[in-house]
Image 1: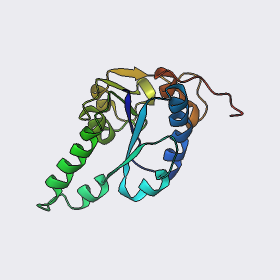
Image 2: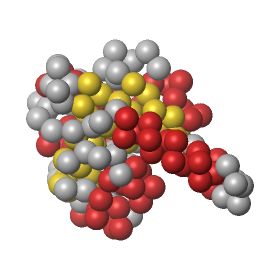
Image 3: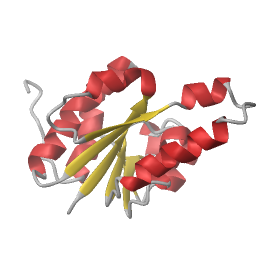
Image 4: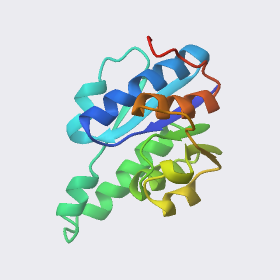
Length: 161
């Protein structure tokens, strides 16, 4: 069974811009189960979405604020266990930051797709991907995200869609 982990941790607008790509992947791979790793405070945006089987809350913002707390390492480990317990066979990182790429890389997925070239927000993130995609001819964030979805087998969408 195909299990796909989506990583787009934060920013309401950026999460919304990734939704059409995730919907396209779900439509192209109807038997796939999709989980989404997202910052805890944005998890409610994704709850109940018909294309997402599981939402995995991640609290990188809290970890950063409480990095000296003795509880933080345990929180990090529990989050990574939650990601790995989904047992993804593939992962898509729509964010392109080191923190999202680390989650993608440690997920256990053999296939890890993320942005490459100028679309990669932090170069070091690229080492966690098995495939890097350049979103040529993209005019909008939705189109950039669709380039990753297309790499996963989704059909291109028209601008009207």
